[in-house]
Amino acid sequence: MTGPSHSASVGRAPVAFLCFALAACAEPFEGEVASRLAEAGLSRPMADCMAGRWVDRLSVLQLRKISSLADDLKRDGDTLTPVGFVSRIRELDDPEIVEVVTRSSLACALSA
Image 1 (spheres, rainbow, N blue to C red):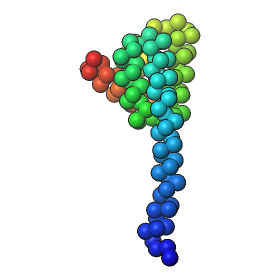
Image 2: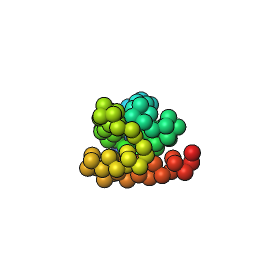
Image 3: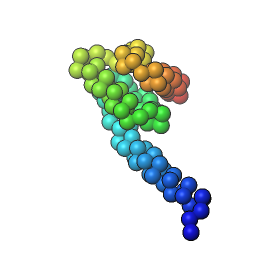
Image 4: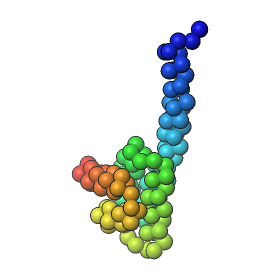
């Protein structure tokens, strides 16, 4: 016999699995994004700090957008600074990315 609590827990299982799977996918992006930021000119400690915060707050798609922007900056030969990066991040036209990047830049600069 299945009661309401059984069906509710069964219904949540796929959602919990999906959340876990998405979190596992984001982890490799932390290192990838940090590496690309460092290659584009940010100090490695700043890049690591910022990427670590982004993984907890942004989707994999948003992380890919940031990573692509860092690649473009590197390819263009631009030297990346935290202030310059926040300015360029606005080009992605994603308010959530702008907010997360701005806050993490400040938090990471203050913690360094």
